[in-house]
Image (tube, one colour):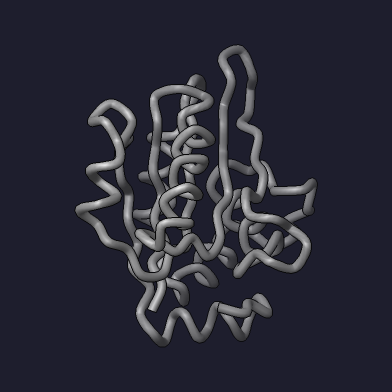
Length: 164
């Protein structure tokens, strides 16, 4: 079972700093980061920038297609320049299959604004208390969480060629 979480930070570089620390915790087997993507919105820019944070050479569990469509839906800024040709309604319906509903999309869109960043994580086993203890309160950010059921996880694997 995996969990998709979104962490919002009050600085454009907050997500990247936290991911660096999570990768260190992964080496200690405190968390398993299966895939990650970052959205950062520098001051003065009209739209955020996005990138897949896990090595993109076949290692990412979800891949650019998933992140690109999700970011295109939320921010109208596809990852890797991917063109999102479907309507917003059709994409929203598709992501509902993965436990990502309209409320989730609206909440993330409303919270990730200019001068902030967000870390999108697909994680496996986590020792929550140890992860929490590794971060100072000001580093933790704000959590928006969407748990994936076993069925939703299987659908992700099927639709996006994921190797979870």
